[in-house]
Length: 57
Figure 1 (tube, rainbow, N blue to C red):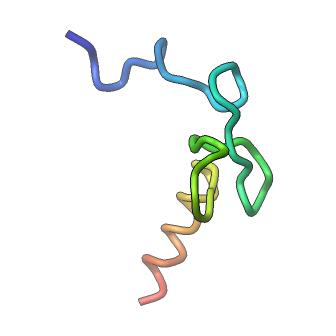
Figure 2: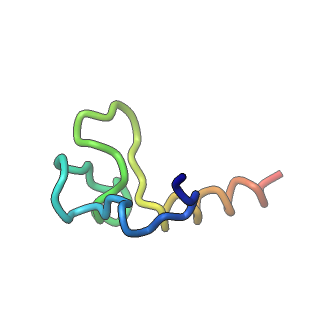
Figure 3: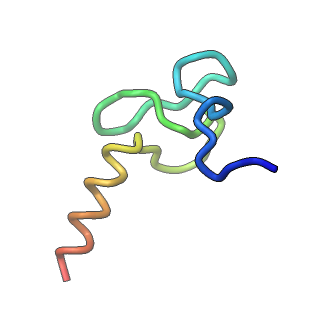
């Protein structure tokens, strides 16, 4: 049985694995592969964008 928050097996963007897309705002690696279609945001920018849209009405 695997824990939900198993951090040892979680992939870290930029450390091995498939090439990751860059964040369109800060250019940091995202959790999305380069082949992902659409706007890609890193976890930090995704969170900030969610906060902005939640407060806008």
